[in-house]
Amino acid sequence: MPEISTRHLMTFRIQPPEPPLGPLEYGNTPFGFRWVMPVPGGTFTGDRLRGRIVFGSDWLIRRPDNATELNVRLTMETDDGHLIGMRYRGLRLGPEDVLQRHLDGDVVDASEYYFRIAPFFETASDKYGWLNTIIAVGIGDRTEDGPGYEIHEIL
Image (cartoon, rainbow, N blue to C red):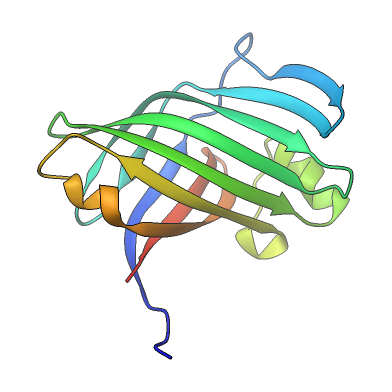
C-alpha cells in the first residue's frame, strides 16, 4: 500500500467580520448550537496560485459533544482574475478554555487543539482547472490576523 504524500497548496487567511456583520446566532437547534459567520475577505498564497477571498459564509454548529462542525463556501479570485469556488467541511475540538480563546479572537496555536478541513474547488478556468480534480486537507489555527489554514494537496 503506498504512503500518502502531500504538496503545499496554499496558506489561507480569513479576514474576520467587523460588527455588525456577525455572528448571526440561530441558537439551539435539534443538532446543536448554530451560528453563521460572514467571510468578508482574506488572502491565499501558494506557489501555483495566489489571490483574495471575495466573500463567503461559514455555517457552524456546536454539537452536543462540544465539537464544532464547519460548513463553508467561498468565492476566491486569483491575482490574474480567475474565479474559484471553494467549499469545505471541517472539525474543531479541544479543551474548553482553548476553544473559548479561539471564539474570543485570541491567538491560538494549531498544536493546542484539533482544527482540520477538507476543501474542494470548482472553477471554469483552464489555467486552474487542475483544482477541480484534487483532494486537499488543511490544518487550521488562529493568529493575530484571524483564522487561517495551511492547505495541502494529497498526491
